[in-house]
Image (tube, rainbow, N blue to C red; front, side):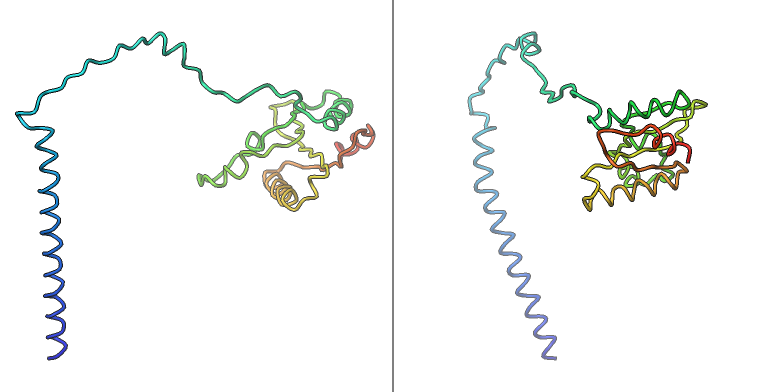
Length: 192
């Protein structure tokens, strides 16, 4: 019985407070917005018509310059990659096409429609990829490992790329970065 009386009192107080808020809101709305409405849209208010400014569209097109913060790279390959490329060309002897700085997404197809799988490979590149002459099919991926490949984030990146390439059936070879490369060593890596 006491609980019912307490609940009834609380409900009555909430309704009272709600009515007070509703009335004050309506009073405020009527008081201030009606005055502004009357000032702007009264039949007695003078109608102000301002002429449109003249626009010279030719002048605007000439002034319009799009900011494009791009320029040509000085080099596609680092000096070590360039030196390796020369030796690789000799080792390949026209048996394969050589792709340089190949985006991983160009040689790997994502089998799921789930976008994060695609975004994981989108911005990753392989230093060199050998393609079979028949059908331009990827045969071998070659990564030159410089000092940056000993960082933990690069190690994780390399492991991921290796797993993706292995899953796709593409062999991957990691070669320690150097300014000189031996033709025999590179030829042996291509055979194995």
